[in-house]
Length: 178
Length: 322
Ligand code: SF4
Image 1: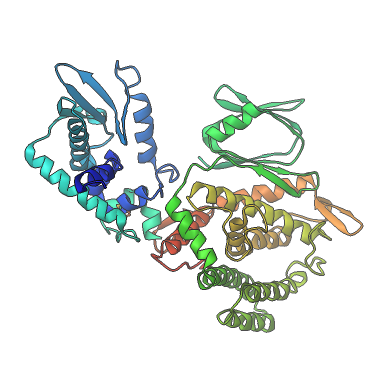
Image 2: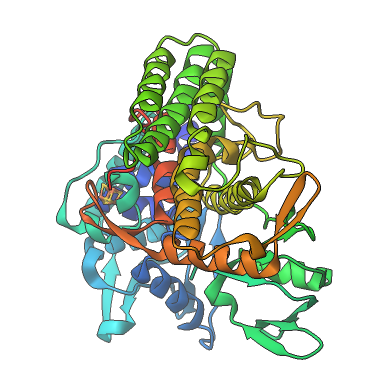
């Protein structure tokens, strides 16, 4: 028998950083994405494509590497006396969600005994960087979010659509509103 | 994104660095991959597996037609979209008799609505009334066979008007081979529509082999047949009427033999050029409140189907509102 904490942790390893960021953007999108209903690649949405190209080209020449950590995909690392997590985003529109995504990466690394407590969000389009720290309070909030995510994913139906203005720019717009 | 290329002359299709090249004895054409998602091939084509790898990577479908314009098959890139969750739900909608019936009826309901609209314009009352009768009866069907049979009856009534509409000899539907020019047009148009829908299905997480109206064993990708029912009256039939009424197609575009007829190369060129034009046409979508292309109607219908399968919404097929 696995004890509860172990079971929960096992579950959490299935949660990707993308899912954490979607949790802060739209729970419906979170659900759809997690169930394999990905509309990002097919919508022809200019923003989505731009993002992918950016991802593929921006950091090609950096002396860094992509890092796959269970389900957590981390853009790249830098080694000083400790590890920094870096994540590149194309627009600041969902900065809050991006911050939590990065905090989740830091949290995951810490749980695996990696010496990491900070990271940097990059917005090359805005020539901007945001430094991220993971505090104790953040950890509590994150754990709460992870539990929520779990519950959402156990639902048989996707959560209702948001009816927000930014839906129009979402890759799922046609799906949600048709 | 999403353009369709039609190859009419015999030649070689190859990967040339990061683009495609089509070479014939006399010419060489470069096709940018970002630009294309379907290639239809109506004549002899040479290619190698390197090309197929490349097409696969770029999500490009290659469809083959024989000398007579009959659809022979497709190279379809491996599905990129997979959702175990959706497949299970989709299968459940097939296995559960009531759920399957509901979807089968919906496809036929959409087909009848769109057929009816094509006739309404001609105000053929008697036929329309009979069709409406069948449409009512559809609600009480209890088996897939009944649904199928209603559809067959409606089509027969519908086709009985085609000589009037077009002024061309018809007689009735004949397939392999098509018995006359009208039948040749229907077969050709249906095949183009089938492949168009197939491509869209492959872009979603829907499983193309699990269908509801047609038996999954009927054709490999029978879900495309289901969805085609809804779109054929709009994509194929309206186009045929237009091409004939505007005299864009006539006798000389058909190769007519004893008991069979085929579109000539020139005829096919005219047909696909007009088909492409139609796919790019836009209409205002009521729910989305923006203009969408004809070809997007297919994708939107698949979304509705997914939402139905997720039990979020009831599938209502695309019904022409224009
Ligand atoms: S369109 Fe709106 S409701 Fe739908 S997934 Fe996107 S943000 Fe969520």
